Length: 122
Image 1 (cartoon, rainbow, N blue to C red):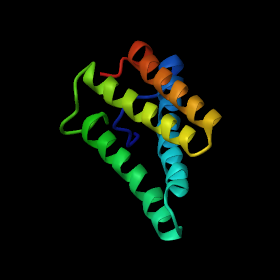
Image 2: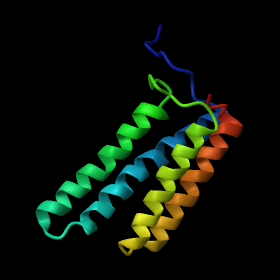
Image 3: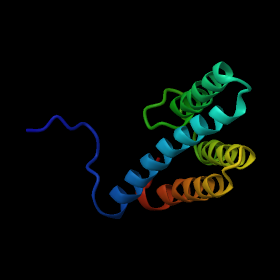
């Protein structure tokens, strides 16, 4: 007997969902990194580094997460996810991390699309 309540992650769908989770963490990390570069002064940099990922996590939790009370339907949910990854990529490019920003945006958006095709995220 196990205490699992969610679906088992196996096969291609399991790999895609695992990579999706990692891209979500990278999104938050990228925003924190960008936040450290945006503030003029240590205090403002710390506030930005905390606030940016917090806002993104709140949006994700309210509208994208599988257990969100106000979960958006498709394609709106994909568009919000697309916007979060694209905005994170742009901010990272603007603060001097162009390769990281572009890679995060491309991989994040690609995995978001792949999730819908392979893992039937619905």
